[in-house]
Image (cartoon, rainbow, N blue to C red; front, side, top):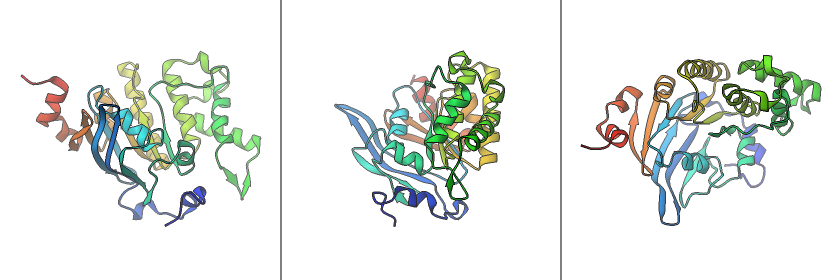
Amino acid sequence: MIGLGGSILALRDLKVSLSSMDRVISVENIYKSFGGLKALKGVSFSVKPREALGIIGPNGAGKTTLFNVITGFLRPDRGKIVYLGHDITGKKPHYLSKLGIARTFQIAKPFEDMTAIENVLIGLLFSKKRKNGFRMSIGELKKEAINVLEAVGLYYKRNSPAHQLTVVERKRLELARVLAIEPKILLLDEVMAGLSSQEVEWEVSLLKKIKEEKELTVVMIEHVMKAIMSFSDRLIVLHYGEKIAEGKPEEVAKNPEVVEAYLGGD
């Protein structure tokens, strides 16, 4: 096993065939408390290569805390995170991004006075992109940025300052910024929040297209049930920091514990 402390890039450079692995990432018995509040209580699950896993649950269920633990913003009290067979528990976000783990946030926070293409370029400049073994030139990186903006449907706004973008466009720019690092697994935190019904349909179609074209593994937190039910191959449900259900979307939707968690008991 490669020591992450020695050469963090060595893991990314491994010739790992995802098709030969049964899981990309595993969350193993994670606990996290904030004082007396137990945000996560023994949460475990794994994600298969190219799978779309949805995570749902009422407000306060621990969903974003879970994302923060997976992506290194928080260290768990107990348990571990295993990525491509390697323990990455507690590793910092910038290390994990170099390994191909990327996430979006509930509220998009681009560099407001920079254009869309400049925002994507920031991510590319701090990536480890190479061409024939050498760092790419600014001109080559701009071409890469344009390709990413085209992928998320923002090419026509490439020269617009971020503060002029609509809610939908800002969310797409957030997606473009994380796609720029060429992730193996993408964690999406409420990317549909604030969108109209029609906009949700557009975004689900876009995400499905990107997932297939880039062969991504995706984990999505979402409150818009129409979106997560149609996008996900499998769902897990958190309630008060515990996993209470797991399965195909249509199975989970009929689970009595899930119905009670969302609607309350009699």
